[in-house]
Image 1 (cartoon, each protein chain N blue to C red):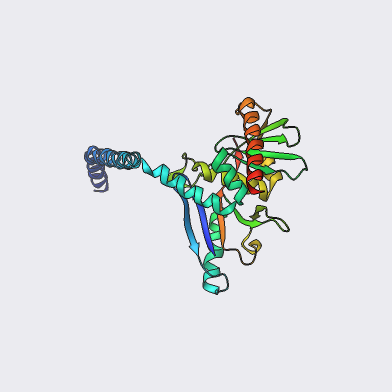
Image 2: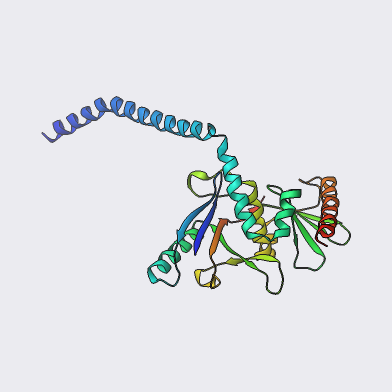
Amino acid sequence: MLLTVLALTLVAIALSLPMLSRQLTAARARRLSWASRRERRSLADPGRERRAEQRARELLRSCVNGEEWAMYRDLGFIRVLGATPGYAYLIYPHKPIVAYVRETGRLLNEYCVEFPDLSGAIAGSRLPDSDDVLAKWMALTGDERRLIRTANMHLPGRQVDPGRVRRDLWRLAQWERERSSTCS
Amino acid sequence: MKFLRMKPGHGEVLLAEGDPEVREDEERLVEEFRRQLDEGMWAAVPTHAPGSGRRQAVMIHEYAEIPAGSDRVIFFPRASGG
């Protein structure tokens, strides 16, 4: 009797396997279709990144001082003075932080650092440009040593063209001259 | 006080808001603060550097370190070598 029940159970399982497999396949297809529809929806909104960047710019503006904001708006980067006298950093969006000697303009290092959001579904995407700049600014002004320890340090020129940085330092000097003559 | 979090592809989002002087609000803020740090976020409060017009951030490692009178704490993903 027990053997018969066992045999019937096995037959029932064997018969239902194809049906279960079909349902699993259909569920997987539905999941993929939803994911692709979600992705299409996000791609179909060209203003999404622009709005995110706009929000990020407002947040950055509310955190840094007037000079730093104007520097970012006009030149596309922010200079932050280092804790060591005479040292300074240039913060670019989604590029390494460049350390240099303020007096001579000599480039010292590139500090490669990222702020990857590894939580949930947003893993893999990156912060808007101005949020990346603000994250670097906060980490640098809040705990310079920790950020420098965390970053990968390279010689100048690995990711950021030294010629471009020198041009940016020249543009910054010009900008500061114009600004001080306007203010005085 | 507001808790804001930088979100990829979105800009900042408001996580929580409350008056730290009110016990229920404070409990909610403490809980949210811990949750964000557990999720791997760093927390900072933008402030004025004492004695100058410079602005700077103060990194916050636990809720009790939030300077009194702060109107916001910004959470952002932990830095890693790029």
